[in-house]
Image 1 (cartoon, rainbow, N blue to C red):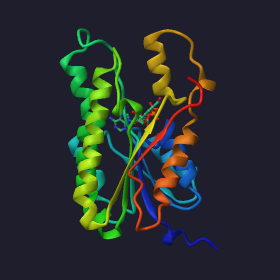
Image 2 (image 1 turned 45 degrees about the horizontal axis):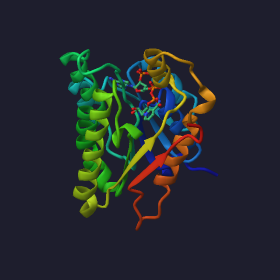
Image 3 (image 1 turned 90 degrees about the vertical axis):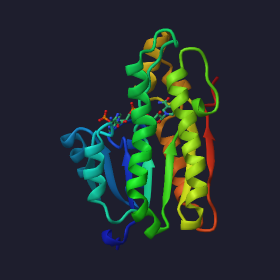
Image 4 (image 1 turned 45 degrees about the vertical axis):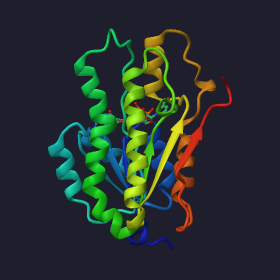
Length: 232
Ligand SMILES: NC(=O)c1ccc[n+]([C@@H]2O[C@H](COP(=O)([O-])OP(=O)(O)OC[C@H]3O[C@@H](n4cnc5c(N)ncnc54)[C@H](OP(=O)(O)O)[C@@H]3O)[C@@H](O)[C@H]2O)c1
């Protein structure tokens, strides 16, 4: 019989939708989930759909929200950063405000939340998984701000991995190609053309990469994984 108290605890930001929600579904049979989301009712409803879960309500752009929500956590075995946003546009078109918004969610909030949770993660010799992107390695016209945020996120992950090695905290970057989620609908909507769900990864395929990373034996660290669609 499963003892719910003995389950590893995992916080999934962006756990209400898309990839984060799929990660929650994959981990639900084995983990206690903290479902990250901005909308209290939605996060609570998603949490209620799993055997052992609770909402983690915070707008990640608010330092006060992050401090308050993180301050309530004293046990954590894994932190999965999936919350993220994008904006398309040429450098000529993008505003200072847009640069700030994207970098705030995709980089600044990740660093702040991780920093606040490091004491708990160190106690557990835990793991941090960052949902990065192919855009963390390469870019193309119209993708400067998103790609810059994901390059920065990769640098953050690489640095954190080396800093935390001595504390036993392991760090994984996962770099998916196009995934069939609301974010991909937004991108295709901006670019024009057909939304080809069957040509994209499913959120579940990315979630399985997260499960693989979290399942590494203690002496091993999955540093980076690329998951890309078969279709071009
Ligand atoms: N979709 C792709 O093709 C693709 C490819 C490569 C990498 N990625 C990366 O994968 C991650 C997940 O993307 P997705 O496609 O699953 O996106 P999504 O379906 O648009 O979901 C985004 C999630 O982030 C949360 N979020 C956004 N802003 C937030 C904020 N200020 N505070 C708290 N939560 C916030 C959303 O919560 P709310 O419900 O409250 O809005 C939602 O749960 C992102 O980091 C993205 O960059 C996506």
